[in-house]
Image (cartoon, rainbow, N blue to C red; front, side, top):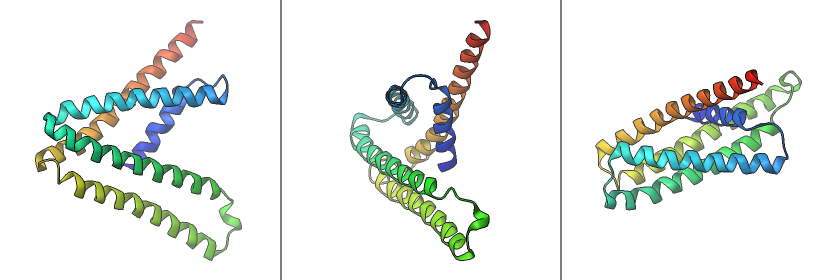
Length: 161
């Protein structure tokens, strides 16, 4: 899941134009993220066929999980930036600490996922939970395909100029 998220994030960064001010790019990224979030909500709602009561109970749990997950990913990204060093210059102790930190980050993400799973079991029937996990995976594939198509269109426009 973590790898797919980073792949999606990298792909999004590629489709955002490289020209312009940093703030413009941040704003474009935020707008694109909001657009994707809206598509994701629609996709999941449709795939799960949520009733009004289920949706009212489910979305706060899901949104809380997404917020915690994004915060954890941001924290992990900040830590990883600090770790970009020449591994050959580090001692075995430092390398062991880096490896242990990576496992701790992955464990934290897994703990968040387990917490979410426990919470979602309280608001959705088992079949819809399985459908949710499938829908999330399927949405990522759809999103990546959309990004690939956008990139092809951008390349085609650039080649026609």
